[in-house]
Amino acid sequence: MSQQASAPPPAVDLRSDTVTRPTPGMLRAMVEAPVGDDVWGDDPTVNRLQAVVAERTGKEAGLFFPTGTQANLAALMAHCERGDEYLVGQQAHTYKYEGGGAAVLGSIQPQPIDNAADGSLPLDKLAAAVKPLDDHFPRTRLLCLENTIGGKVLPAAYVEQATAFARGRGLATHLDGARACNAAVASGVALEQVCAPFDSVSLCFSKGLGTPVGTVLVGPRALLQRAHRWRKVLGGGMRQAGILAAACLYALEHHYERLAQDHVNAARLAAGLRGVAAIEILAQDTNMVFAQVPAAHCAGLEGFLKARGILAQIGPVTRLVTHLDVSSAGVDACVEAVRDYFSAR
Ligand SMILES: *Cc1c(COP(=O)(O)O)cnc(C)c1O
Image 1 (cartoon, rainbow, N blue to C red):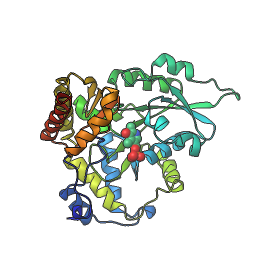
Image 2: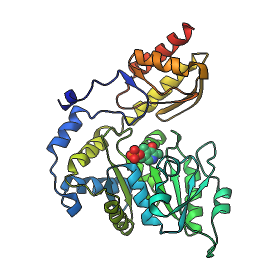
Image 3: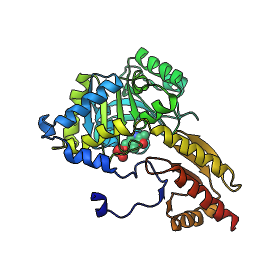
Image 4: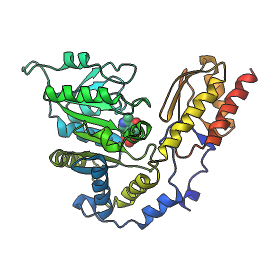
């Protein structure tokens, strides 16, 4: 019904898993949600979401945020004080794709570490980056990992080692788990297992789970009390936010298991594109495909696909993402369009 207000969606949109539209069932859940003023702690739907996600992840408490960027920043600010530093991947979202918020707004110095090909931060590099307690140095306080990263599931054994290393050096641990649900579903383990090694985890609902907005930060109650203060300072105190939390509760119930279908569709997309000689598949993990496209054809292919109702950001390294609104027929239409484009050239 309210979808009439927006432009009709394209047939296939592979640019990101953030482009999903709320389903009629999700919209109904939002409309029917009991609400209150969440800045006062009064919103029953927000409170339920926070409790449900804390329980699902095996943590003490949860805190609802409008975005993952704000949840990560509030978490970093809750873990670290001014002049502290956190260890983070060069390719990590909190380092590279959040406008430098930790440094800009948190007075927290990032200590970036080169990610290995599997997304991990090698332990010897971590060990070399931890500073001794000395007034010359920032105080190393936190290790931040990301799972999935570039679609890749971090190896569970590595996560165990890295978080054990951090604990041994007195560091707290935070997981940017924007796509931790994809990691859990792809690994066939409970979400709790993916979150267990970390003190705190942020979980996005606006990616594969398909809500309009929303991230829940989980962790120890004392940490979340500090994060709650920073959320207010950062402008994230929302009022009748139960309308948004209801979408997240709906997504947990109806869109979690089906993430497996996105992974199947991404594999189908990679397999189809492997049949096109001009394209080289670099990787396919969970719901992401990375493909090499000849530079001379990027703009041409993007326009050709668009004319067929297929949206994709085509570059020399192209990322294609499957989600709730991409069916296997949509995947096949994309493969066929790419094949047609190159067979005409
Ligand atoms: C999307 C994303 C976030 C948060 O993004 P928002 O758009 O602010 O919700 C954080 N980390 C990763 C890895 C992400 O993909």
